[in-house]
Each structure stands twice: as structure tokens, then as C-alpha cells.
Image 1 (cartoon, rainbow, N blue to C red):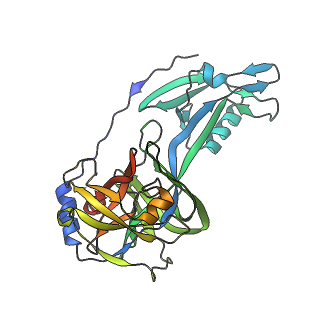
Image 2: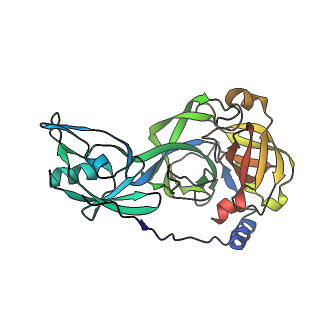
Image 3: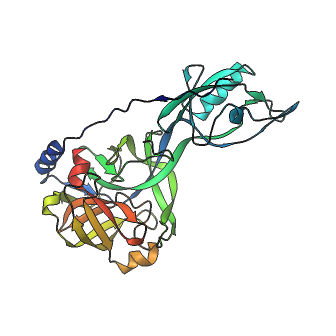
Length: 335
């Protein structure tokens, strides 16, 4: 058995020209956008097969732990077998069946590093299949809120922030479809613990196609047959036009219909490099009663002030769920 040898992966950093984004936002300021607020469901790829646990394999002649003995850990991502890329669970199982009980080289990613080790699959007595003793997944489902849809192109943005796994690595789109999501329950937020929306994917209602997820959100294009006849249109305004004081957000916390809720903008910080351009506080007692304030799943909820779209909700304060951060709309559009 080979020992795990790690190699530091080179990181390619993409610089975003904030001046270019601001110019684009300014030029588009008088354009109309459909206002979001609807909750959408999507699938993100683990970038291979992610190990979420280790287990034993019961063979004819005893109990084995091939993955554990090879140095595999929970959180590792299996990305290749004998140099052949593995993208999902189906491909991994197919490769193990093909090689049978032959020792194979397994390449894994762990916290940005790459490693290789050797594993001998074991034939499980009960199923007759070759296994390596891992509990795995290849996708992660999630829900978030659509912020806006460009009226002419139907291009949309959601979330307002990037998505990372347990190892803080950015995740990529898996299923290109974005589904309408019905909110069926709420775990209320409380001091020290973030709440969350519980949603149900309406799989027969794909509303859009996803194209990428990056530091400022999830992006894609709405389907041509989506009905915008009841959707409100709005102009955008840059952060420079935002001010401390009253504003509203649009969120879906029950069913599929967005509702308007009152908030207050407590701070405006146009230069924040973490896209935390606003500090907001929920003041609407209806929303506080239902959710406790800002909860997971509300990310992307559009922030509107003086009738114009200025940003989106992104984070909640753990010590006070009625408060959170927002990103300026020009940063989402500029990206």
C-alpha cells in the first residue's frame, strides 16, 4: 500500500474589475428587471464522489475496511481511479465492477491538496458487488432565492454569495436545471443558531437553466415559457444611491409566492471587499414571528429602497437573527 502523498494544487484567482461592473450597472440603471423573491431549488456537484463516512465490507472470509486502511478520510473527494476521472457514484461503481478485486490507484482531493493511494476492493458477501467501504454522495441539493431576472435576456441571479463544501472549496453546478421550490416549513432562527427554510422541489417545474456559481451568486437563464405576467418590474440603483433608513425585501417563506417585508438599512459600505455592502435589520413583525428574522434559504432576497433594486440579502448574524448583510446589486450584475 502506498502512503498518501499530497501536492499543493495551484489556485487560479479571477480578478473582478469593480470599475467595469460599476459602469455596467450605471449604464443599465434605467433598464427594467423582473423582481425576484421566489425560492428555487438546485443541485451542486461535489466535483467527484465525496466521502461522508467510512464503513466495513462483510466478505465471505471476514470483515474488511479497505478505504480506512488506505488512509481515506471523511470529507475526501474521490476524483479518479487508475487515472480515469470519476464524476459521480454511478461511474465509481462501474469502475469498481470493471476492476473486480484488482488493486487500483485512487486519487483524492483533501482541502485543496491532491493525493493518491492504493485500494483493493472487496466483494461483499450479501450483494456480490465490489466495494471499498465508504459512504458517499456526488451532489448536494439546496434552496435559495432568485434576486432578479433581466427582462430582455431572461438571465437571472440568485443567492448573492458563493457556495462551498465542508472543506471550504467552491462547488459547481451539477444538474443544469433550476426548479421551482415550495417552502413547506421553517426552522426558526434564534440567537446562536441559524434558522432555515424547508423546501420541496417541484421537479415537474423547471423554471431556469443554471450556468455557473461564483462569489456573488448563482447565475443562469429562465425558460422561455416562464410566465412573468404577474411579476413586478423594477429599476436598479447603485450603492451610492442607497441610504440608511427604511427599505423592503421580497422573500418566500410559505408556498411559492414572494411577499414584501419591511427592513431597515443600518449601514452602507460600498467598498467592502467581502460583498457585505449593507447591514440590515428585519423590522417586519410578520417575518420575525414566522422565521425569527433572516434564515438560510432567504439568501438572494432582493432589497428594494425608494422603489429601486439596490441589493440582495446574503448572511445572517448568528448572535441576532433579525440582522444580516446584503450585497450591492451592481456587484451581482457586474459579475
